[in-house]
Length: 267
Image (cartoon, rainbow, N blue to C red):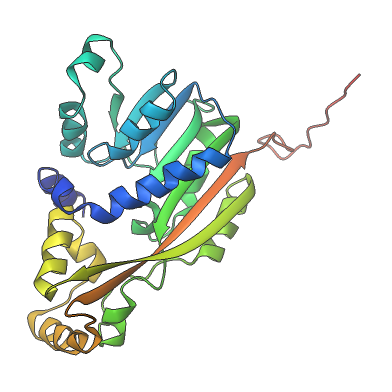
């Protein structure tokens, strides 16, 4: 999947309607959170839509764009305005996997990840890594696809679609990773296509077609897409994406790394 994602860097923005909309909705949620991060990172940044929004909101913060596809990071750099380059306000770009970040513990005040964690079979190691790189009091904010994504295709007989973790499972994983006070929300966003080809084209441009649809062969695909036609509304084919939003804080640790309790004495 990494190879497909890298190859999609040049075409990603043409099809990233959902990711861009979810990024806007995540950004709006920051209105209800009181933070002034000194260091922040967009992890799984793709072409940089999220990091640019975070820079606008927190202009004094040191920004970092992290993605495991170098071609995506090249697009981030290409989108940096000339004045930001001259003022040295361009985000630092780092090629890395969310499960193994080349950052010291306690590096970040805000870790942001838009529509990334659902591509992992087990998001828990990534959540533990995000917990590690956050400073105490730091915030993790993320979004992920939920299990009701593309329910229209499942109802049409698609059996190879990727299975996603639900909101409650992700909330439990946040607690298991050491986060405190997790807040989970869910909503559904429906895109409309004139034909199945539009959905396939978008997922190919995003570099996630095989990752999302699985090994859907020609015959099975034709059968599924023919059945999908029964779901047409106003002449368009609905494609619903369940979006899970989560945020949680890194609390003061209660135990040391070897399991001993931490006792604080206050005057």
